[in-house]
Amino acid sequence: MNSPENIPTLGRRLLSDLLDGGFVFIIFVITSKVIYSKESQNYSPHEVYLLFFIITLLYFPLLNTTFCTLGQLITNTRVISLKIKKLSFWQASARLIGKLLFGWVSIWLVLFNRNNRFIHDFLGQSIVVFRKDLKSINQDWRRKNTESFGLISRALSILFFIIYLTILCILIFNIVKLRLNKI
Image (cartoon, rainbow, N blue to C red; front, side):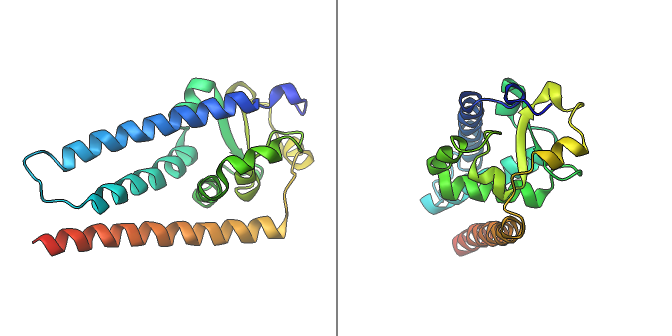
């Protein structure tokens, strides 16, 4: 199970991210049209931006911890934890913050590791695999293929999760504040 053909390629992973980005944008457009209909011109552009960030901050961690994102469903890939347990909300949040902070720079790391792991995979202590291989992945395989930064990775994961919660709280607070100022 530890041969490179069992790990999704860079192209497949980028396609999954592209599909997810498009889907998040569609959700955002529909949600903003419903919330800010033409009859209510009483909204600030800041509210719309905040709404987009909230949708993004909820979409990836919630779907990665419960099932999979739309992009993963279409590309037949899944994100799993390198730990024995299921991917946690903490790990999924660290992955998202890593994606947002490092973006395309993260791709360069793929060239230097055998499991096509991005920076956000290391931060979230996770790996992307094909859906069909989920049953055959066991504890020994995870132990052998853990290319983790150890304590640094855990500390960064906790830090990114705290940043994630802080950003989410600030966004929600600002939307509530903007709405209350209009009343």
